[in-house]
Length: 500
Ligand SMILES: Nc1ncnc2c1ncn2[C@@H]1O[C@H](COP(=O)(O)OP(=O)(O)O)[C@@H](O)[C@H]1O
Ligand SMILES: O=P(O)(O)OC[C@H](O)CO
Image (tube, rainbow, N blue to C red; front, side):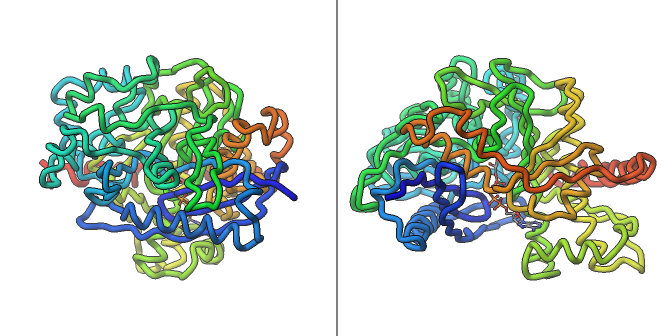
């Protein structure tokens, strides 16, 4: 009987379950969208029970679709939208509040206060991060401050915190295991990425009891076993990593200097920096990379908050089309964006700007602007933002960045990939499997249980699907970039007065 590794990929947009074989081929896949809750402008939440229910439903569906028994699954790897914060009661398992999603800006004021309190450089030196509402620390603190009775409950040791990996492992083990991995811990803004422990000073500052925090382990190790009632067997949960670090691993960027960019809800460019912990002067984050051995590897990261979500906004908010993939054919109907630029700063801007007051902006509209121009400008905006991060990475690391491996839902868009190559001036390489996040989680789990023997087994699985070669004159590129920079300057600081 054939055996497989199961990956659970809980992304911002959807929960997915994918079964992989030894060649890294997708054998079965099921996916379910997760509802986004926007209680106020700039606030984003999800229901933790829906996150679990959707994840469990797709797990069952993927097994049933190919009639795969639990006995054929040798290990489970988990990967997740990072930073998203869930707090629940350790005895009842009930969440005390909705999950506060990574994009949520409600804690921007807390972060400004932290900077006024002179802690910004401390945060960066310990956690590798630039203080921002993006990370979990202030979100946990917000829940403890705003949910009646939560702080007292937390102080009595009754509440647990977890990012989505922790929540899923807790549910899969029926509350027996409360863990996370290094990559997810490194996104909380509470974890010392050098000493590999929770930082007491930051816990005190945010008034977060240490008893709430999960135990932190290597990304490729056995965390526990699934409850037999849920799965019919105790399957080892043997890998966990934040989705961007999992994608770096899934793209086989095992060596220092290797880079990938993932186009999901946001866009995240990561470069493996090996054992070197580079502190960026260009708005990049230092984070822990997923790896299979005992040693720690680091990565530099450029985080773009709005990528595929800008396309989703055109689809669901503006109702310009019904399926995200239609954006490609609309964009191709016009020869350019006709001078229109969109800066999709729905919730501030991440790297390299780190500006919480930036807001979405459309400039250059004329009477001749068509729906097609808006769609094209939105796709182009994704590529421009990634290009800004690539430039920061080039300056920071002094790397030529002469090839970019891509993955994630929106990397299926050939127009976007070609424009990315054109505007960056470097070729873009898309592998056969763009479900690289899930593949990375599967690899981490499979290495822990001996399904794959070594990383060289895995490297052989990487297959090119398409190479996009730059095909734009540099003068044209420069003109377009000039316009983009002007558009960004319009978007930056938009909410500053409103918030002051
Ligand atoms: N062909 C496409 N063109 C442009 N955007 C796309 C396309 N397919 C998917 N997307 C966008 O990609 C995102 C989904 O990608 P995915 O990797 O599943 O994200 P996540 O992991 O954040 O849930 C959605 O925001 C969707 O709008
Ligand atoms: O849902 P994605 O794939 O855009 O990833 C979200 C990131 O993990 C946020 O840091």
